[in-house]
Length: 520
Image (cartoon, rainbow, N blue to C red; front, side, top):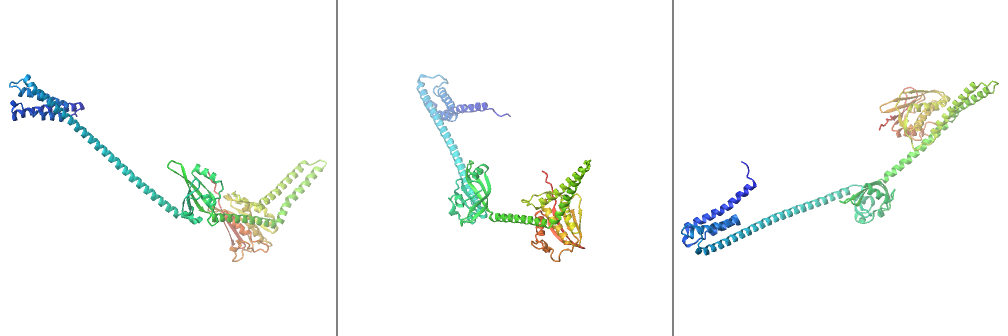
């Protein structure tokens, strides 16, 4: 069964309202006929029918009830014969009835409209009251939410302030003009002022800030990036300077406008002093290493003079021969040219020796580490010390592993370590001849190098003391060579130690980490 349309509902409503009018008048007619004396023209029951039709049906059904009532009275009660004709004698009565009926109908319609207006007004008032109640309820809920949020924010701020007071770092907040707003316990301990003494004071006047950049430039960088980091020098309450690692963070309001700066400072005074001391020690070690190299060159002076004399003497001999070949009646240009080639070769050999010495005795500050092939360094030292070994009847032998991985090191410092160990070995075999062996071999993540001799070996019970500064077993030794060599090896991430051989002599070993190439 399909649902009734809107027009169908309206037609049914009209039928009901006008049907109520007809039914009301019919009921009044029947009741008047049964209960009252029609001959006396008493017809009050029609008025309730008119009122009922007007009240529930509206003006149209009310007027229909008035018309039907008048017709019913005229037809049934004013004539003995049933007729709708109106007699002259009945006209006053019908007029009075119609006027009364119309007045009753109008009163009913007005009363009904008044009741409807009052009902609508009451409904509107109830709706407005409900809406206002809902608005008030919503406002109260928002107010409760805001109060709860404010309490939560206040509690969060209290917790954050408590946490900021727990940290040992100095933390304070100041406005863009430098006026202090917050000062934690860490700042109290670090600088000596409590919060009550510094709040509302200008931070940089209080701490006498010394910065690497002008404060205006720091603030400009802070406004641009929102943060800044650097080192500052502050002055404590007792006048003591303190170096701090300072971190600044810009605080903004809800609209994004900068309102304050949070500064966190960590005291690095002792660390800076330690760094300065380490730098001073490093420079001292470099100076001692340089002095040690000069001392070694002094010990090698005679041997180096002999090594330099060889190419120089050979060059002089070749030059004389070239002159003789050219002074003949028929100059032998070919032989003279060969002599000149030998002169060039000997000159280059002498220049190479001088260059190696120059690189060895110059100061290396700062250290320049690069990929170094240890086998090449070992061969260079064997070539440089060959004359010294020959002078003391010591033979040199190399057992170098092929394809030895490179190490990342300062080449000159590695030359110094090898020269120290080789000179000590030659010194240990002086006057008794012997053999010096240099070995290299790869290990697990490192390279192992050893320098062995066939001398008397290490003094009993003094193996560890050999590497102490100023400890020496040689009458004219300085006691710096092995100590400096160990510091060089350890600075490169390696280790240096010594042992006696199973047979004759001793061996010195050192390791260095393998250099791994970094690929982008």
